[in-house]
Image (cartoon, rainbow, N blue to C red; front, side, top):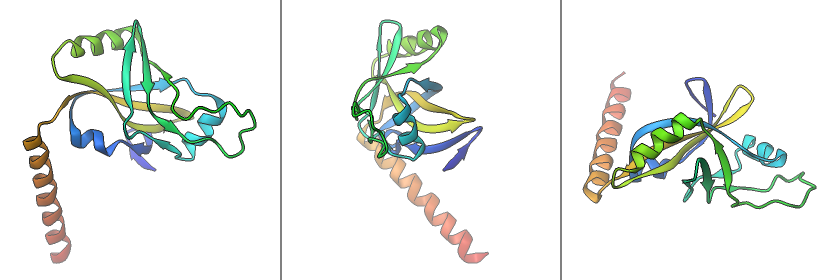
Length: 154
């Protein structure tokens, strides 16, 4: 697990950081069942293709895959069901205000543990153009070369 502030990161949505320019981040709770909590703590969650939507005054995580916990005896597991995210009305209003701008969306960025609670990091993001993605790859490559040169000489 990676440490991010006070939150231990379980998994990140790397594709979101590549495809989108994150304008603002929000930390949120999520409503899960008991076996889902255990499965997420074990790291059996996939955010690839997941997205966040606002319906009325509630926020939902959709298309996130939480694998069935092996010791689950209830037999009522749905891997891709909608899960409610817990945000304050003020945060929801702020997100809705951002969404009124053309080309913005909400994407899940990471899942982590804060104390004993599972938290999601979601972000209001704007899609990158193809040339922005090429620029990101170029910057990452330059940074990697610099790191290699530093390690080689020290």
